[in-house]
Amino acid sequence: MKNVTDSFVSLGHWPSAGSFGVNTDILATNPINLSVVLGVLIFFGKGVCASCLLSDLLDNRKERILNTIRNSEELREGAIERLEKARARLRKVEMEADQFRVNGYSEIEREKLNLINSTYKILEQLENYKNETIYFEQQRAINQVRQRVLQQALQGALGTLNSSLNNELHLRTISANIGLFGVMKEITD
Image 1 (spheres, rainbow, N blue to C red):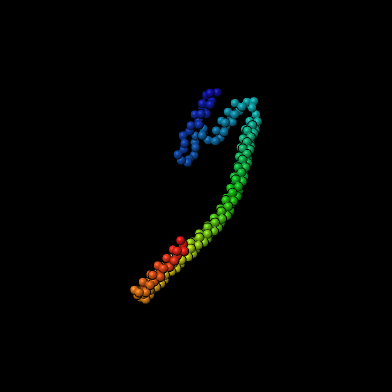
Image 2: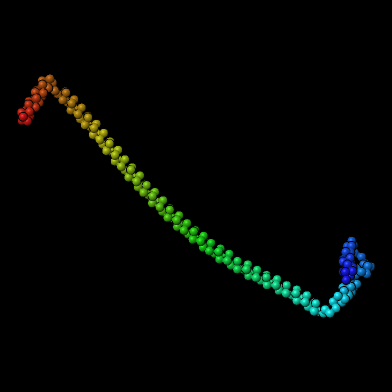
């Protein structure tokens, strides 16, 4: 039996043809190969039904194909399930993004209103400071004018007194004032 398999192995190592042509080698032609294969099948397959063997091969092949189809269906269902989960996560993330966007816009509006309000308050304070500064400067200017007017009035009065007072009038005024002080002193004693 080993000799038969060795002869098939040696027939399997034919040199490859380099070009087209008529094959005159009887061992390399299909009719001979088919007859040898059938002979081997008949010789080794005694008691084995050829149709049963073929049926078993086809059944095995059919079972493998069905298993492959089942595996493919399971993989497809798993992929569909993962796809649905991914779509659900995507919808959730999109809703969260929309919520963040809406919250962001409302936060921006709130901050904008706060900024506007604080700016108005600062402007109001600046207006109050300006008004207080203007009032203070007006009061200071009024006081300066009063002091100058008073100073000028005193200088004018002093000038009038100095021009109208002579020595005699000056001595009488001093005497009268001393007399008044004396009377006041007696009243207080």
